[in-house]
Image (cartoon, rainbow, N blue to C red; front, side, top):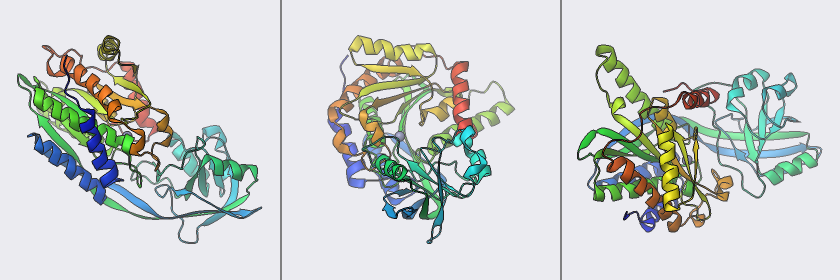
Length: 436
Ligand SMILES: [Zn+2]
């Protein structure tokens, strides 16, 4: 089967988004510039486009400092996580306590009023953490030789768990402060916070013979604050845009809806909204007439593209659907000799909210050693290549041509097995969010 997907063309989109525009935090100017660029490219292809706007709670860290006060003094480089807490200009001062995880058994009353030195907060333990009242957190990166992640905190939006001024430090700095027996420290984290507007950008190629069957193909275009997000996810949105070009040229029996998701990094905001809207309209229509076929029913599949382009890496696919969907990727992998790791389960990205409302999804990504630099300033274009994009792009093009755009009958059941539905529910529970 001949393919049209061009790695060079996709790579140019990454250059525009991750190099020229740069960091694209949801709700800020660069996020808007990225949305405008993507929409204008969709329009150039002659596709009908629209936007789905929404508001997010967000902000930026304006000051961040970690000072070790006892038994020695040192200013340690750090990244403030201002969504978890802010300190005021004088900061907070406290005794340090080391716990290796925030699993329930380690969250003892001892941590009250102290600065907890640990590796990560588990979201499912937020309520318990709030009850134990630590003063703040120092998070140590999990891997050596990488810079601290610029994640300003990932607590669920709009919920009050308390105020914990917190910073991230590198693995090496964390190692040093533990070895030197740091006992007391001061944390300063200040931020601007507020509500901002962002959007999903949608482009549609109507199906020629089965326009009522809708398949969503998408990737998020925002990045973590201050981070260029070349692989995560200029790579995925670039693939989405190149697939739009390819299928505009090839045509499709079914409707292909290309979506550039907004504000994924703050908690899958754009895709959650899209799923919630479908569900709400479906509920309202079915209350009137149970037999009505709604837009939600017409959605047959979501193809999600998140984390792409690493020159050295392995193609991966994560499926929320029936074995037919999983096996289609496995079969084509063997047939074409394009190596793929195929698994069933939740991929923490924009396919999951759609699957939470019953639409099967497959998330394609490119796993790589550079994943340890994800969400840090090291996620830059130098590790990516047009060849890697083309290898996976041509595979997805072939797979979509066979099973989506040209298939006589849609081959995948519109069904998510119970075990996977349970995993989706657990994902939302751990994250303290309601299912859409
Ligand atoms: Zn991502």
